[in-house]
Image (cartoon, rainbow, N blue to C red; front, side, top):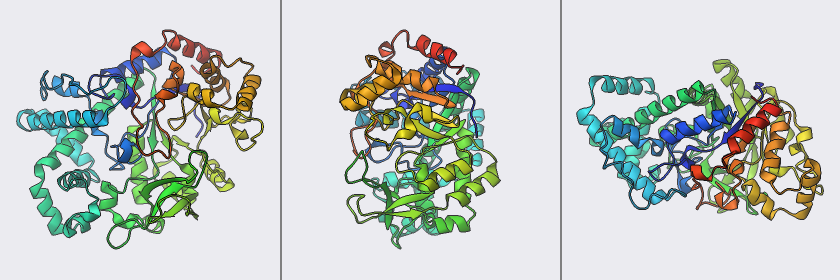
Length: 498
C-alpha cells in the first residue's frame, strides 16, 4: 500500500512527561499531539502498546490483544470519582527524567486497585453498561487474559507450566474453580482493560481531529508467560509439559557477537495453516482497529526465522527455518482486504524476504545511521539516493543510539562519508539527518524525539541484546528546543510533506 508523503515522530507514551513515574495517556499525550500538529507532523509512531515483560520490554507482552495498564491516566480516574486527590499525589521515587520501574509499577498498580474497588461500589448504570458492552465486544480474548493475569499473580508470576496441573492444562473443572476463587482479581484486570481502551480511543480521536495518525508496532512473537500461549498451546512449539522446545532470536550480528536469544516460543505454523491462520487474522484485525498504521516487527521472520534450541544459552547454535509468510498474508488479505502495514525489513534480508514484502506492497524501512562508510558496501540500500517511494525512512529507531550518540562513537571514515554526501560539517548532524530523511523520496519520514531534541546517547531507549537497564527514557518540555516545531514545519513545507 502506498502512503501519502508525510512526516512524523517516534516516541513511546512512557517517555512523555507526567507526575506518576512514566508517561501515560493523560494530558501530556494530548499536549504532544498538539505539538505534532504545530510542527507539521502527521504521524505519531509508538512502540507496542501491550503489557511489558522481562526487562520491562514492550516486545515481551503478556497478551497479543490487551493494552498496557501502566499507561492508564490516573487523573481521568480521579475525575470519575474513583480516585481521590490524595491517591494521585506523587510520592518519592517517581522520577521525572527516567522510569524507576519498581516505584512506578507499585504506585500505579495500587492506585488502579483502589479505582477498581470504588468503581465496584460507586459506578453508575451507564458506566456499568459500558463495561458490560466492552466485555461482550472482546469476549474472544478478554476472559482468558483476565483469568491468566489473576492466576499469574496468585502464583507469584511463576511460569504457567508450573501451576497446578488442572490450571496449566486448562481442564474445565479447574478453570471453573479458578474463576470462582479469583473473581475479584478477574474483575480488576477486566476493569483495567476497559479503562485502557476507553482512554486510548479518546486520545486517538483527538489525534485524528488534529490531523495526526497513529503508527503502532506489532511484535512478531509473544512472551512465553502470556495469556495466548497458555490458552492456545497447540499454536506454539511446546513439549508435553508446556515448555518451549525451540525459541526465537537472531544469529550473531553487529549488536551481539553471540546473537540475540529472545526466548519467545516459536509458532507451530502447521497448526496455524490448518486453522486458516484464524489467530493471526484476528490479531491483525484487532491491531488495525486500534491503530491507523501497523508496523510489523521482525518481518523477515515471516519468510524464515532463526530457531534456537531452548536448551542453548546463546543464539549461536540456531538454524534458519522457512515460514509460510506468503500463505499467511494471502489469508489475511482475503479476510481483511488491503491493510496499512509497514514491514520492518532490517537485519539479514535475503531475496525471499524482499520478494514477500513486495508481493503484498508493504513499505519497507530505511535507517539513515546505517548508510555511511564507503569501505562497507553491505548497507548501500540505506543511502537516500537508493530509496524508492514505497519506503519509510528513519534517522534511527528505538534500537539505535540517538544520532548524536551514534555520531560521537562513529569511525572517521563514516563521518567523512556523511559530511561529503550531505555537504555538511556535521556540527548539527541530527538536523542533517532529519533534513536528509525529509528531503528523500520515501513516502514517510519518521524521527525519534531524541533526535529532534538533539540528545546524546545517555537518552537512548534500548540496546538489543542487553536484557536490562533500558526503556527508561523520559523527557520534559523544557528540554525541547523552542524552535524545533518551527524547524520541522519548515522542512515539511520545503519537501512537500504537509
